[in-house]
Picture 1: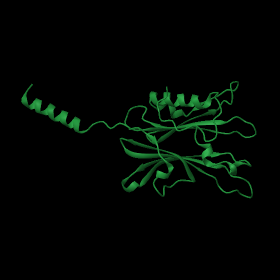
Picture 2: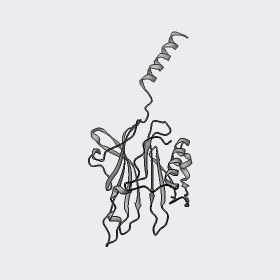
Picture 3: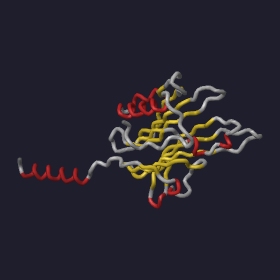
Length: 221
């Protein structure tokens, strides 16, 4: 090896050591009282997750809003999910928002917003590229005794993908699923994780009590 080649290899090694790969760090639930002031949320935050990855520090938030009745009729409750990137001074840039609606009935106004949290809200770097993915699973109750409609939203590089289908209500019931056409363009590890979450939500299971299931941050076993 010539002296010039040795110097070049040494320079490359030093450059590599000076620029380490940034991996997504542990994402943890964030206390609602610790959220930055004046976040542009629709309604009331019901849960939040703080996460740091190769793009910076982020907040993933779920909120609920109950519009006022119109001519005495309750209106659907608004479900919203957000990703914010935090800047200097705790300023927040909204990266995406997803909205849905819980059907209204005569008791809608008596149900606290926090009692209808998403069944699963996971933020985790599944494919190891240094960027955290978000997985949000929830069910919308059917009308007049109809089965619940389940949804699983996957946000990969700030683009939304979805799984939809019927949620089994008991051991003798069935579940179904329909994937977005673009779902199969996701990395295989992300697809597998999403489908595992979907099975946890859609297949027969014991009822979830008031307040819903806790936020899941650990890897599935």
